[in-house]
Length: 263
Image (cartoon, rainbow, N blue to C red; front, side, top):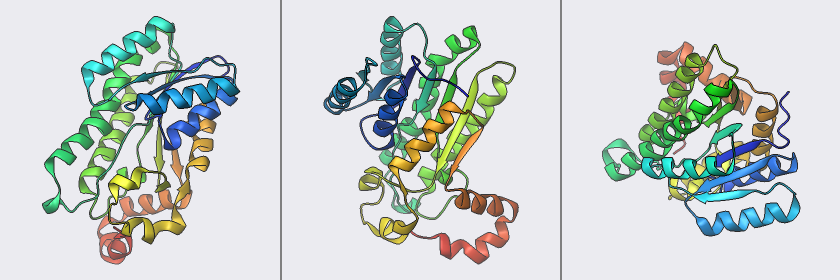
């Protein structure tokens, strides 16, 4: 078990959704949340709320993780304030659900810049220090879409496959150290994510009864910080579906492909 009291925990995508809720839970446990996101106004309000409730001195830095130069600048500023980042939660990400022939290349490019390059860039900024001190924990939020792709999410699923590939390779690179590497693979979550991803509202309507609450996911991620492990898959039954699909892909395509087409 890892005690996060007094630890510095960087959270990207912290201005809303599970990022915001995890920041609150970190503060409740006595950790110091360091919040990163594009919206300075939202970050300022969340930080003020946290510092009003808890004696943790939460702080924030506006950051667009797709801008690699900005990533370097912001992490340099963080290291001027703290001597070590104990946990990095790469949570920033977004999706746009479109059929490939209808998809906008600008949307696809931006998904890869945020969901993949952003994760790698932030990881590179904390990894040297973690290797030097032989400790730390990097948590990358991927998705069940990174294991089980469906129609109308080809580009988004590709970014999450890439996040899982990066996470698994990184874990092997630090295998001889005490650094922990984890992937979080949630199914659909009740957040503002779908305001951009699913403008038609069809997907949300079709999977409403299966959607996870952001509170539940935040609580599970907190558990992962306290008890590090390779993967956190939510919900468990959905992950079994991806396992079966990987074992019998041809059969699954024929038998359940239409069932999975909820977008």
